[in-house]
Image (tube, rainbow, N blue to C red; front, side, top):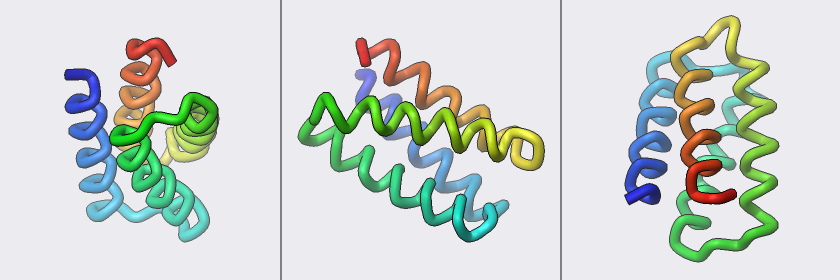
Amino acid sequence: MSKQLIGDEIARARSHLQQQPLPPAHQDELTRTLADMELHLQVPEPAKTEEFLDTLRGLEARVEAEHPLLAGVLGNLVRLLGNMGV
């Protein structure tokens, strides 16, 4: 069930990115991270999960002021990964 919730949050993040794009560097980093997370959900790699958390936390902090809804979605992803024991 948690994997489904993470998949739903990834879809929400992509929707926000389409509606309100980020600066190119942040957009590319987040797009790449979301795609990697989807692959990770299929074949988990413990070391990669910590990298996702670090990336998501950093992106959340950088976009919070101008894109609060997207920052909230990223925060949800961090919490969901944490709830899965990551």
